[in-house]
Amino acid sequence: MTQTFAYLRELNMTSLVLRLVLAAMLGGFIGLERGRKRRPAGFRTYMLVCLGAALTMLIGQYNYTMLHSAWGELAQALGVQTDVSRLGAQVINGVGFLGAGTVLVTSRQEVKGLTTAAGLWASACMGLAIGAGFYECVLPVFLLILASIQLLPFVESFVVERTRNMNIFVEFLSLDHLGGVIARLKGLGAQIYSVEVDHGRGEEASRPSAVFSVRMKKGSVHEQVLAAISEAEGVVIIEEL
View (tube, one colour):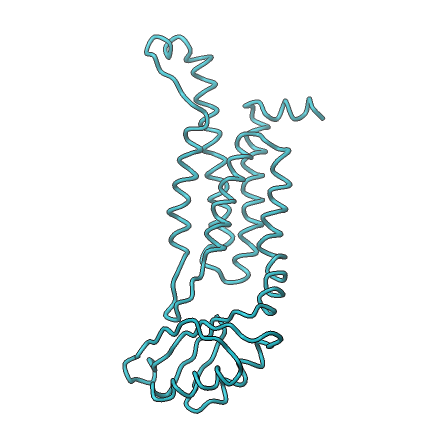
């Protein structure tokens, strides 16, 4: 097993093909889950990011190998030096800009895309590990990334549903009904931290709305709280953020 890994860490055709195929497959598997949920970055995006990161690390290793073998004398005469990790560091920074493009703040003041951005960054790091031939690390990292975006949301939902803090988006027929919702929340024993009001433009497509940050009393069930508020006069849409 040790000899096999040592051979696959060398820059030979078998190792190159294995690393690139492995990066494309594992990156694609992670992206497939995001694509299934209709997230901004999906199968091809993750595949290309992971593949590109692996290729970048291979280029760094190739340059280092050539400067210490075939190009050795010329590099020494010119004083050329190279760092294998230099290109990989640029990948980590560059993917940060790509991930930023998937983060959106909706009209309801809800931030979306953070998990997708983090997944892209982690996928790029996994690609660097594949390109470096760090095979022992690749499978655990792949499984952990996949678990974090596919299995852990159930754990997150379980915890969030039982927390006392809530962010509630409410859309009204008019701002005259805002007081009724506040009264309903206080009647439920809620402590209101803040209210962000959007006055809208008086059109049906852009009614006034508000985002309430509240802390419910102990034992409150989120669905029951939302149902109680929805019965207030003038409430058109209600949603927990």
